[in-house]
Image 1 (cartoon, rainbow, N blue to C red):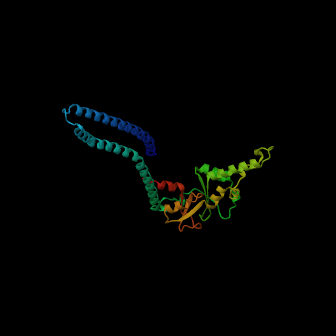
Image 2 (image 1 turned 135 degrees about the vertical axis):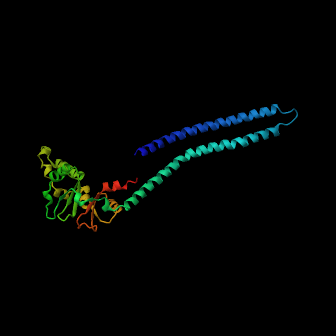
Length: 281
């Protein structure tokens, strides 16, 4: 992070320096041109003044001026051109280097994920904090406030994992999703409540259940309920898990023996697991 800030600071200062350098060199070129003209007249004056009477000084003037400008002007122009080329192409070189660095980081991160087995970094099922949601359970028996919201606060977690009696993964509900549903319910009830009755007279929001959430018409909630979890096999890599998380609703991947949803969960991979293991040292 600190290195990125330094690079941005240098990138901000470079255009100012190039502008300053261009102004200085332009002035130097102008001054040098005037100086060469003055020097030329001075040499002409010396040659004419010291020329023997009766001799034509033209040939001498031509030779002296040719020698002077042939020796000095190319050196003068080459030096200025080199300095300008270095500083004015430096930005393009830096941009190319940044692009290459970003590409290398992406490729390296992908290669790293391909080299890591999910089973080596997964959270094993024995360490999972989850709720049982059995096949015979009625979703209406789970109250969103008491059983889900208060649960994540009490356990200091951010996701409610629901497994059935066979340890099959059913749902993962993020606290933000629960809060979203409760908020939507509140505004919906306020909008439907007659003006003369206060929102406080409506049915308490604490009565909302998981069944209500499963019937939500909100696209985000429906998407997470339908596509929020995926499954990979025990031998799959983190690259496979990451590809499944390209689905915008999925941030949780469960590991089973064969990668099937009807198999017992052996471990859990989250989007945070992917991010942590994508970092290239």
